[in-house]
Image (cartoon, rainbow, N blue to C red):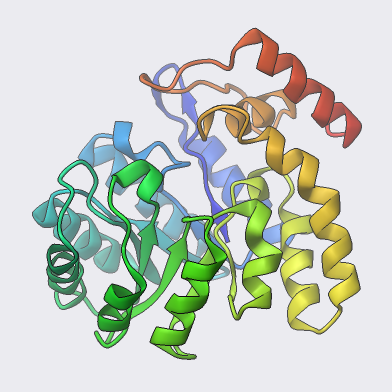
Length: 286
């Protein structure tokens, strides 16, 4: 699954490029498209733009690939608004980051996600990334959340395989453990994960899809080979805060006409730009 970037042109959402990116992923074997997440710079989109991007991705996909809309917020009412909109627009599911800045208790987290889940019928995937939110959702909390009818899984970005194993042990087989870190996709699959919501897939979707497919088909050596092949580019796209490097790479690769970001995201530093170009050349991407 790809954590899709939001292309901008002249400061506005670039709708035609967004449509082309959806087609690119459908042709490349991506299983699901996840618009308006962190990689999609959701924090800098207006409410109207957020809804526009989700609607455009769903309309372009036309059911050919699943769309899991980013609808999270640190304001429960805002998360409810975005998630209800995603359901009305035809999303197959919603990805909700845990509330950031507020630092809710574990009980507050349960109540937040329950309020959103009970208001809609589509599956909910929770996004756990304490490095951005300030609060870790504990494995025992996932044990409670997994009992809510349509909370279907977690995008886990703790980087802690022991924590992920505990989540899996406490939630059972039906609860999807999804890697939120490209570099840990293969290890997460090995402990019972289902796949990845990937940043690297913005530029190498076929390879990411092939690695996950190879693992699920029991071709472990092939999956391992792709994992190591992707290692250098995975490091490069996180050389600065996501999505600065991946968007820059997409501009260099001509996947998008303009690699612009919205403040407070700013251009890649010259030193890191040189490093990124070197890696892209080594992969023959530029």
